[in-house]
Length: 356
Image (tube, rainbow, N blue to C red; front, side, top):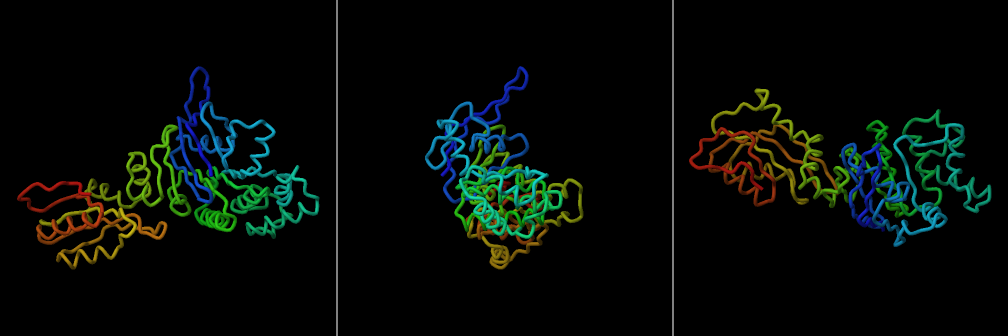
């Protein structure tokens, strides 16, 4: 388990003081994949470097497996760090050494014989599915292959924790997916705790169990991945989600006067957001049949995260006003978020614009 208690980290920039991490407390459970997400400058990379004390906090404590790293001697800290692997955005491989030599370098001082080191290196390269590149040099590898070598090197001393600092940011989407699958596989196979630093929503959705959202050095929101993205509380989390969701494009269509969103009298545009793990797309057809209304879907943005749908639908709804009102109430009762985006119904009384 990793526990950060009131961790603060500042830097001097001339006469100014930069508060990179501000009084952050987090608990990361043993064996989970924990994401820390935020826009550039949020403090997430500084925070992850505080976990292995590459950046020593100005105040606060860092516990890994119940050891307070901030209280260790230099010698004991070096020993503790061997159980905390780390991979980086730009791989940090030594260009003049072969793949095998890059991995073996981490075994310096391990007490293993040369033959044992060679065997360990081959075992690690096989684990990350790059055994055939043993004698290649980094310049001969693709970005994904380089990251696999970096992962093998980080695992050399059987770490309990693997820190990933923007480890897929320099990779194309297909390669990113394969590296994330590898990390998931290693997590299950080795039981290793993985901390993922990223600014990419897709990374968190694909592999993380829980996530913390950072802004200006603060953790502003924390929870399981489904809850955070289905029910964001803080504005920065909502802004993050908007950057990747098709459901937010509806406002642009309305502002541009697109024919797609022109309504006939009695119609309304609704944005539906799934907020519970047991919500399913079948709810749309159920509501249509039960309340005798038509739903013409403009956008649908639904992904399966941790076995449950996350996202929602934007639809033009037509039918009798009373039936539409009843359908909205039914969706609200099912804990589906309902937002009225554009309304051409005839009102006999006011209707709340945001429901749920």
